[in-house]
Image (cartoon, rainbow over all chains, first blue to last red; front, side, top):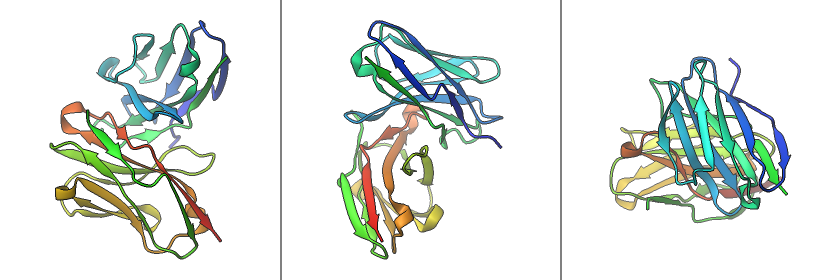
Length: 113
Length: 114
């Protein structure tokens, strides 16, 4: 079974731009969560989607948003990029009968210049 | 706010040495506990998890962890490390009241010399 895939793997943007990252969960998984990983703050939860609905949200500004499609694929968007948004963005998926066990993708590394 | 503390930022061991990585969490309610590992250039992988039952849980690659509720701890152990265990290790919890959002510790980098 294929794992969680994320595209693109690397991205360079400039301040003020916006970016969209994509995540395809493991087949059959309907829950998708997003995390930000930085050297200073570590791994922080952004949000979780299940059946196209945001089920949980972390403590991030409104510039960070996401959505989930009917095929469970998810996208996250960051608008008005800031230098501090440079990070590895990780997506994780889980099966509805075992939602706590999350499987992570390789991440998208975003560099904001 | 709830948090997870990993006491060791960087641990350096020789092959065959024993390993114990500390993890404490600050939350008085029911938690689920996890250890994840990130090998160089690879994605986060689940090592082991504890939801309930026997507080000593065994995971992949010979790792085990013990949940001590009175100490709010979930330490990771391995009796004999190998060079291939070189990686970053993350302790994480989910709070039953907060769904599946993982709260991670800052991680411990383990370097094993052969």
